[in-house]
Image (cartoon, rainbow, N blue to C red; front, side):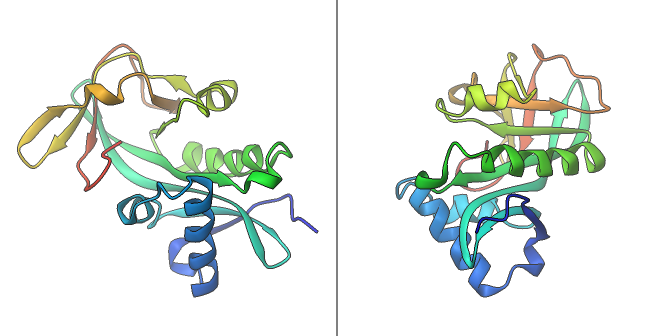
Length: 179
């Protein structure tokens, strides 16, 4: 039987079985296009997990990042590693995981952000995530660097901080995909 309520836990409290199951699930969901850097990006925050018995069928996480917008730093809950096993999709598991993580974002961060695949953009938009229409950047070791290839795929969940969705948004630097 599937537990329809995601379990929320911090990376520090994932045992070896849960970590291995989450990594394997995401590798399957992303059809082998889940790099070690991508997996690393999903760690260090809160995980929403959906189990069917002792088998993991859904995973999503939110990690803390810093964004810069309108000249001020913002504490961001960045959503990573969202996936539901193919044969369990369409049953509300993704929505349940996002509801859990959105509560974390609203309670702990200035805003939420994520980079949506083309196939998931409508899902996030229907949940109230808003497309960032301005220019995107990263604060790289060499300085501010434009990330034009990410424009049109960044979504934000506004919080207490005022946002101009047509303004510039910069994320902190990290290896691999910065957004």
